[in-house]
Image 1 (spheres, one colour):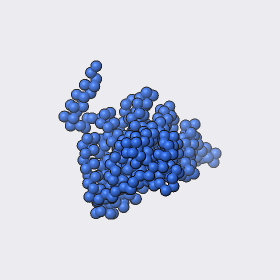
Image 2 (spheres, rainbow, N blue to C red; image 1 turned 120 degrees about the vertical axis):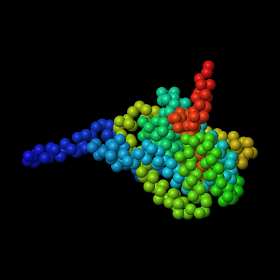
Image 3 (cartoon, helix red, strand yellow; image 1 turned 180 degrees about the vertical axis):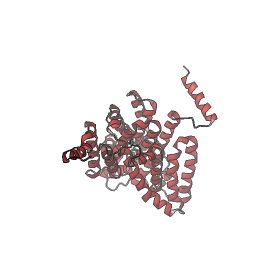
Image 4 (cartoon, rainbow, N blue to C red; image 1 turned 60 degrees about the horizontal axis):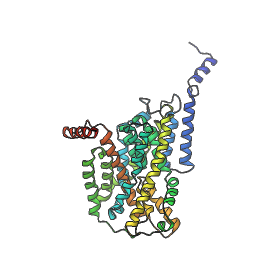
Length: 399
């Protein structure tokens, strides 16, 4: 059957994306352009926001088959790495290879600052429950307070996969806005005299200690919280590549090529999940608001506990480094350095702030492990662990 020119033109026009474009698609395309502007124009975490923004753009082009829900499409296969918890642990492998645990080992008290910053996680869990989310959803939302994108994605995929897109976007957005959100809170909670405090030089750490730490930390933490093993285990393996001195090629691959490739796949997969149906909901606005509160609370908690440690130590600890207790490595530590140097250009806090910053990475992973143990599927536990879980639950339910 022959087609006239008019029929052919009408058929072509009928198959374009313009015919399927809805108001929801339009809103999400605007959202994607905003993310791209923040990444390129404002340079807010461009390595993450740029591919997330472009993934969102691709997913919201009608008939493109690029959304993560379109089975068989390219980004659908990328998303399986998120769904089956492959990509976030690989990001942690690269983070471990990039991270020097020396500042934390030189001053183990900094673990307390990393723990204090996790207050944002737990208070947000309570706030999320108050706003109508169940405990699993609230746990996934609360992790945003740790400013840890991979951990947020990991726990969301386990406990609240239907909220993955808004949780991931909120987590990475607030990570990118660390230099804007944290300084006002830090200045408000500290005095000029506190911000000028100079800390003593850190003592050197032997290679033996640096090698033993990731091994011991993995054994202890993962026996206590098995659910955190994929994240913490990969973090410590990457660090062992760095410190062992015998795996230079693996270390180089983990901290460069591997983490770069996985970042592209992970960010595109997250962006492709930001469809109009999954993102344009009241729950998204609640998550964005709760994420901001979580991050502000985490920063404040770290600084306030830093003030306590400052008093206890006789003024030897600068409370500004407490803000680095969130998991945004090394951005939060750089913010501590920047705010401190504004008061005294000769004050160098970066290496001191890396201690609580690294502790924050571990702390957010441990918090995720606690939530998985409490609210996740315990069916994979041993019979003894299952019985213990049921016994504790029964005792808690008693009047």
